[in-house]
Structures are given as structure tokens and as C-alpha cells.
Amino acid sequence: MTQWLERLQGLWRSGLSAAVEIFLLFLVIYLLLRFLRGSRGAAVLRGIFLLIFVSFGIVFIFASLFELEHITYTFEKIAALFFIALLIIFQPELRRGLLRLGLSPGFGSVVQASSPTIDEIVQAATHMSQRSMGALIAIQREIPLTAFIEAGTPMNAEITSELLQTIFYPGSALHDGAVIIQGTRIAAAGCLLPLTENPELSKTLGTRHRAGLGLSEESDAVTVVVSEETGRISLGVDGKLKQGLSPDELRKELTRLCLEAVEGGT
Image 1 (cartoon, rainbow, N blue to C red):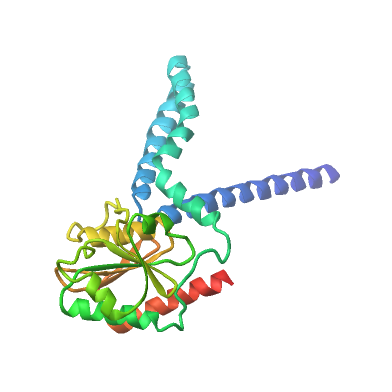
Image 2 (tube, rainbow, N blue to C red; image 1 turned 90 degrees about the vertical axis):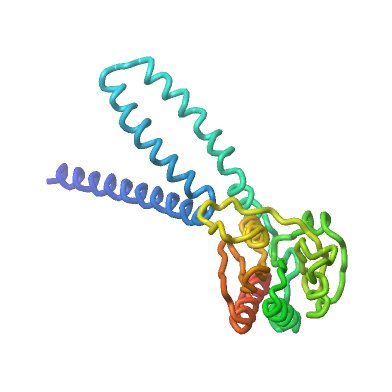
């Protein structure tokens, strides 16, 4: 009876251990897929899973059963280099994740949710939308955008709807670049932002939309994009693009996102 109980207890412990391992493995894969969702790395990761299943799964097991030593040896060496290849393939995604993990709380400045700055941005975007003036406005939250600001034209000016419209007026020397906002100031204009390489993005979207989405993939910045072709207002955040927003919807989203940044900093 005692031996039977000890054996049952051992099976229960081994079963519990296996369940914990499966859960942790599932959690890691889920978080990885969620982190890469909507980015170029998601499609690459699906391809890697397929490669592992076909080559390292079927072929390696087949070679092991029939003792094909040369094939087994080759696969073992390839597996040793596999993790280095992952670091190279997912370099942009890893850089973004490490940047967010290494960010100190409260670092950087954000647009206060109660500030009239949001109203100025919405008012400018509305007027430019009605006139089909292309525009790209990036709002810094917690992750600093210093590198992009330094590459643009420094301004350190108060945010007004009139100034934003003047910057993006067709023919202006700065209208093709992006405006970066820090707190309640326009830090710089004519800034060049990284373009997204998301293959799932519609090919009808132009450079402004790709730049706005690209910055939101590499940082926690919020980008406001006004289409020069259609006049539609879009909002980029966390690697996603919300298109066709009304002025009220834009104001609501900016207020929510800036409030989240303020609360996160505190």
C-alpha cells in the first residue's frame, strides 16, 4: 500500500512538473507571437516554425532512426548556429523590446492629457485634412526620440495650429519631413523617420504612413498622419495604424494615450 502511494505521488509530481513546463513553453511562444504580431518578424517566425517541423523534425528523426551519421552530424552543427541566426533575423524586434525594457520610469516628456496642446494638434490635423495637406506629427511619450530630433531642424517652439499648418504647407522647406513634439513644444521639424517593412501593410499607403507606422514600431511614440491624397487622418501606435479617424475620435485617442503615458510615468 505504501509503495503504491509513493508511486502515485511520484506520478502526480512528474505530471505536475510536465504541466508546468508545457504551460511555461506555451506562455513564452504566445508572448513571442504577440510581440511580433503585425511586424515583419511574425512572417519570418512562421517560416522558421515550418522549417523546424520539416527539417529538424521529420528529416532529423528519420536520419536518427536509420543511423545516418553524416546527416545527424550536419543537423547538430546547424542547430548550434541557429540561435545566432535568430539574433540577426529579429534584430529590429529585439532592439525595440530591449529599448522598452531598459527605459527608466518617468524618463522623457509627454503631452499632458489636460493640456490644450492636444486641441491644437487636432485643430491643425482637421484643417489640413479638409485641404488635403499631407502631414506627419510624432508625439514623444516615454521613449526619447533624440536621434530623430537631432537629424531634423531644431525649433523649440510653442505648439499652435497655425504653426503646424505653416510647416506642412505645400512648398515649405520642411513639409516633407515629420514634426516631433516633446511635451508642449515642437522640438524639431523636417525629421526623417524609419519606414516600416511590414509586408501586410497596404501598398496604397504612401511614405508618410509608412514612416508614422515605422516609428511606432521602434518606440512608444504616437504618430498622426494626414493623407495628401485622400485627406484622411490616421493614428499610428504600437505598430498599428488606425485610419479614417474623425476629429473627435482623434482627440479621444490622443487624450487616452497621453494619459496612459502620464500615469505610467508616475
